[in-house]
Amino acid sequence: ETGVTQTPRHLVMGMTNKKSLKCEQHLGHNAMYWYKQSAKKPLELMFVYSLEERVENNSVPSRFSPECPNSSHLFLHLHTLQPEDSALYLCASSQEVLAPYNEQFFGPGTRLTVL
Amino acid sequence: GNSVTQMEGPVTLSEEAFLTINCTYTATGYPSLFWYVQYPGEGLQLLLKATKADDKGSNKGFEATYRKETTSFHLEKGSVQVSDSAVYFCALSEAGGFKTIFGAGTRLFVKA
Image (cartoon, rainbow over all chains, first blue to last red; front, side, top):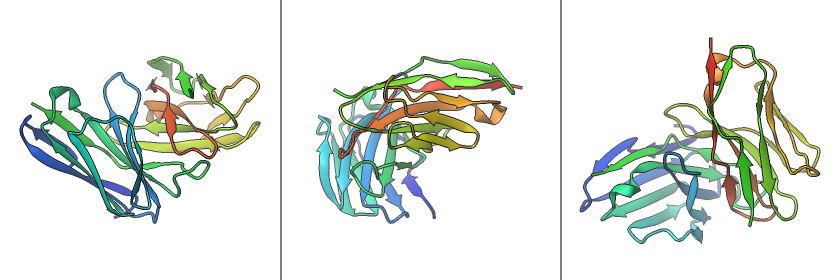
């Protein structure tokens, strides 16, 4: 595998389910990110990790819980989601977290539908 | 706060037409500027970047010049192809900061 991979690519879940999104980067980067992409809205930064330490939590509801066990893996744990949480969830990584070295490499995304 | 404004789409062009997608920004200091592209069903890919005033980023026939005096970073291509159909995002990252702020995206359709 190369670049940034995300699994699953598609997920349908009920409001009472618990599921997790997984992201893995094969680039040797130190920073990882979760974004939410909704139709007709700008890309929303959710979480930023640098060397497994969270450096940004952008007022995200607690029903989204990130986990970064090492610099190559990032998870997003989901529970009791709402229909408005349906979106494309993108993971990204960068060499470092600080500009100008934070050009980001994105995974293909997980298309989440909450019923 | 920092922000990025780009022209609303969709932009529809015929093959071999000239492309301009406008992008202006508001930021303190000297941000790094980026253009990302998202093809259908994929994540974003970095298209080009510029890290200081008057720098020109270029890739795959696309160009953009960092204009500090007009706080702009317009994307241009001399002759578009059908394969350029995608959504284009302008973005900035503040010097020494860790947040990248994205514009709303501009969808480009290129007709054969």
